[in-house]
Image (cartoon, rainbow, N blue to C red):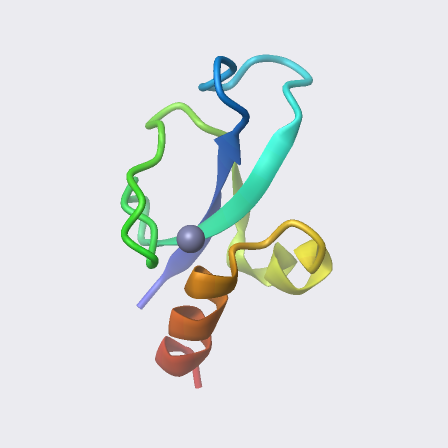
Length: 73
Ligand SMILES: [Zn+2]
């Protein structure tokens, strides 16, 4: 199963606005918009390869983190 990271932005700045501060990173399956934690994310939100998950320790979603670690050996 492929995963990728998808950004959640602060209220009022959804979508891929240049330089918009990412509030938190979620993990989605494939190129979907539903985070592992159940949150629905903007289709035009910024994405990152799943390999970057470890580098986003400060801003990653803890619920997604728990599910992701179970799905990825
Ligand atoms: Zn999440």
